[in-house]
Length: 357
Picture (cartoon, rainbow, N blue to C red):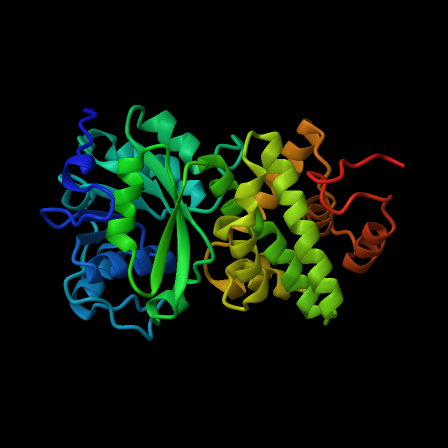
């Protein structure tokens, strides 16, 4: 595997590349499709890898993602294939939108095809059992390859409907950040930059936990005061955990932190919100997942983060309460009451450190 990443030769800040960027998108879900459509609209030579051959052929012919975005016509220039060898080689940027449980396996498959490409993760999750973020998996499976993560309040249906939105590309490579901004930035979709890879990535992964909590709260018809308290205590919990892992707490004031948390916790379009709502209605986990019909990363994230927070001795009452409700069958209302009776804490620990009383 060679490391001759050449994006910097194609583009510099505020400058258009001499030739169209070549973009691959791995995964046929809603968000991957939305990003592929943006890249194609921006003039990039864009091809999506769809695991199922029949689905790939149908999308190539119809220019629609009938499973996840059936109401939207995609760009005519957007291409589709079920063969990785047709999609990965000779690309500049590879956007990986694979569920966390399949992420490592797909990277192993493309490793022999990597030459000068850069990898950008679109997946907001944590690998089961290992507690690896997707950037960790990239570094383990594709060492020396430039990488970044893309995260923010990015509900796919709104993006393809051309509603104004924004996202964050985080990478230590300025050339990669510039390239992703060129590929995806438009008048209706702003792409901001960050160098805090783990902070941005953790914001995208952790917020899924609290969307489930908010969905459950909606099923119980909680008030606006309760929603506001849950949202802000979720932000405190997220940043507390992430800073323990080396992230910058200021990252959580941006789009990939409070922005993504607000969008995911406020919208019935969110998969994790829908799972939480179903659980709040009395469905068990299997019934809730079956009703949704697609992956909700927050379920695995609750399991992983609850275990990790205990190992690291990080105070995460909301996460641990959800674990007790979902995996141990504890009554939601009883757990909520115990949360309200917890000891006093400071509002923002980075301003006023917490003292146990």
